[in-house]
Length: 586
Image (cartoon, helix red, strand yellow):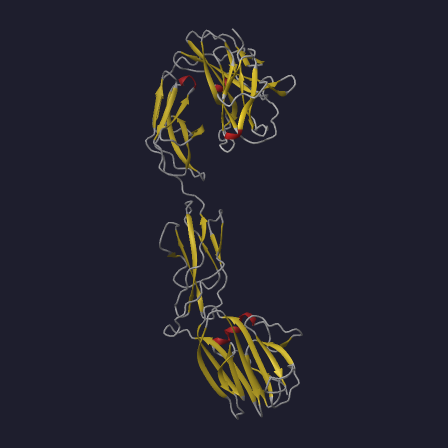
């Protein structure tokens, strides 16, 4: 006789146990029976004592069968005195109060973890029913249902469901696990995901946020619970950090503890405040406009930008480079020759994220016509020597010529205006009656850029872009091979020229762990002919004093010295070195 399955689940919410296995058809036979989560494993026996090997084992999404007066379809069993055993093992999460409901004709027994909770084991002529209320402990448990069809008609049903009344359910869900967050800098969204709770009475989740230093949480997921395991928040884009947690809430309204927290740092789209206290002052002596402003109070300020416009409605032009924040801020705008006209200046602040403030108020200055700067220097030449570089140029013709400024540095291009400017490293002042400059410095083999500017008595100077410039490649004197490292024990403190024309070396022990083991020091000078370091002392120098004077170097040369410590085992430490250029005599 064919088996008749119930067409749908019973109305009881207990049958939600099959939600994750709804795609598994009742009595889906398998060769090796492994049933999915929340799915019953049903074993069919040709007796009511469940002895021997089952005739068949299948997976059932629910226990709701009406066999009538025959045996189950798909398995050979006697129409009377056969048995079916269902088992299910699942994680009940935090556990709590449950209702177990059984109905059978004939016998039915229900066990929780091997403990008999429902016992209706007898041959009856109509369906017998019983419901018991149980408290299921937290964690994973096994439910077993034994059914016996003794004689005549046979049917069986079993369901279990959480009791969700707030007066009955006093057990909160477990805190959600696996909270993870990803942050999108383009959208500013914090995407939260977490693992689904296993409690059968789960209503959903609540999402909370706070600052790391705050002590209270703010619910950001709305009044009702979130029913999925994901949530996207868009925190204020201020560059601040935000901490998130999630709680689970059940149908009785009880909330779990908080999940493990996760943290994101939002993108910073908040611009600083516009600078205040901006002033512009013109100096006739220097021909420059000095712009000053008060330091901003934001902690992430990176720089300030100064803009200039001509007249009341001219276009704003950004001046370069940016100014680094400090407590007293200013920029000198060198207008060529003090060009007559009215100029306005404004300042903006830029933070570490590149957000730029609005422009400040725009004070203005009015310049009158001046005589203009001296003509640009001509005839600039440079000669590389063993001690540095010799520069010469033509004498200036301006009647009010005051001095020359000789600068070393490099040419750069302003990334915003595309205009070149000379980034100065050092600047020397040469009197107006002199057309020569000697740079005495130990140089490498890379070219050195020079810029020579003529300045008059009013402070007017040739602008950099038309001033005399020159690149000089020095003689390769100091690009010496670097030795293999050893024990660090000595540090060369200074290399200086003495009044008598020698070179004084001062050093000290830089590693306290080996200072007591130092028995002396060796001094070396680099030989540019052999390209090797030559030892200058026949025997190691004593440990006191930690200095030595080389009286042999020739004038007009560059020297590279090394000092090593000699340890008590005879080994030498890693060398410390320094260089010096000696000007020629006269």
